[in-house]
Length: 511
Image (cartoon, rainbow, N blue to C red):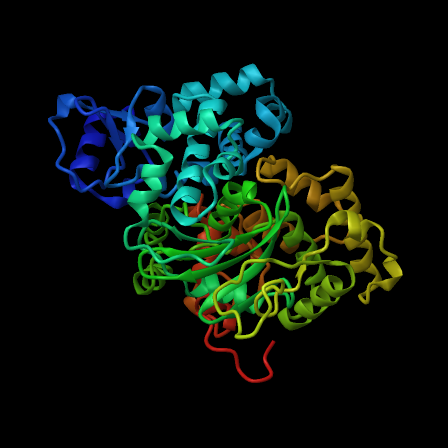
């Protein structure tokens, strides 16, 4: 979009927040770059330039606007929608791959040479992988500076900088403030955070209907790993450098996020996973505009626009849980997963209390009922298959899936090739189309994944006057492409299942 000057000017002058993250507006006279919705008075058209990424604007010598904070805008929806190498690279960069493994590691994960990755990112984003990772480090540094009391040297290394000098230079170049001044500016009127806890605002593009999103997460929550409590979704996180816990609370204009991490270097990756879990970088206007053309779906969209797809923080975990839940109820699937967590999960502790910590709870305990990380594939590979209380066919599918994930024969990571991963998943005996499709939709983030065999989808289709047989429904749903995963959410919303509505307070005896 940034190459269409007139369109960008119109979008910037409309100050429409829907365009935030799509492009960045740079003012040639002040050398400042902003998000499209910045409330500041815009200059003359000839004094504006547009960039596809914050990194490209920074490379061109512009610094971030202190008023609209463009680095805090929602991410571009392109990287979640698309499945090409540039989109896969952007998802990996957001997950911190360049900081941990460098550009050669990024290229190896994508199956390309470092030179090819550099060339493709420069052509589309105006910045290479190092510049894009630097922009993300600057954003992570700002978050740590403004929301924690960590010493600046600790902030520098937690944000991924190799030296304090590089940290200071980057913060001054991007924000036109020293780290100390940035903390002092943000500290005015800010409530002190609990030691070790980080409180963040996760933005999204309106409209946003959270009912099915949080309802699904709460209804399928695995005890010990996830829970809905005090109006927020809580869960444990397995991260590259350690572990953490997160609380996510839906509010009218943002998601309130509270993170407690055992290693602050995981901050950028944890934020990226939380945004992916809640599908916060989606473009609901584009999705709803296309789906609304179907008269069967239009009333559902008009009633509650902006539904998101409940995704995951760990695609391997989701795939394993999907196999456990084959041909059983949601409650039975939760019970099986809870047994697996108790027997093979990693017990966790955190020094940081989260929202809703009960009075008298010791600082070394996790809040509420969060006690474990979901078992790693390495731990599951060592278990005796006979110990799994499930039918032989499902047990075989589960153990073969574990083996494929452990050996790397199946890659479900954020930078994986969706088409290849789904095809490989479907080749595993015992994994049917529904399981492969649910992993594609929630684990791999495919916005066009569809579930024509799902009972809830077929029941909703019949009630709305749509074809209810898988083949006929698939043919009708061709008009919904590339947003069929979102159509599934609207169909599911017609059901009376707890997953289709916002969770309420827990009832006595309810897990």
